[in-house]
Length: 111
Image 1: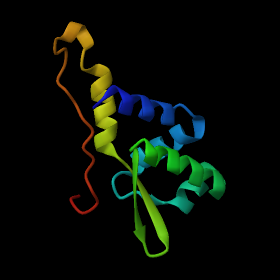
Image 2: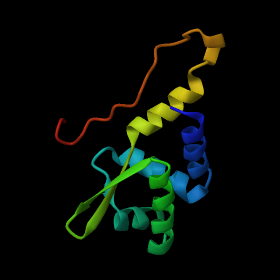
Image 3: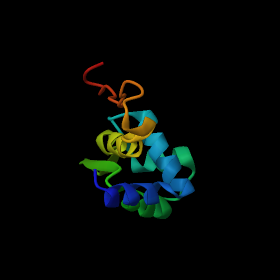
Image 4: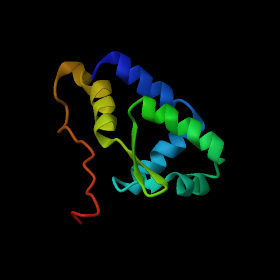
């Protein structure tokens, strides 16, 4: 991952509502959630939620798909792992200090 992409991702997360949204989506898992449900869970107005989701999508931290009239948002676990990997790739003087662990959530279809 390039430094510019990491900076964009970290900048997107450097805001209280966006950080809460992203953490909420990580907890939900790959199946994601409708925008309305996210707003209800976090008490964020629809207009504000739309703005924050746009910022997270621009940073490639969330993906979305349409299901009927709903927009379903999911955390982009690959991007999340890439950011964490970028931040830790030179830890311990460049030596591997622990087994590398990435988040690989199971989808509802595989559980």
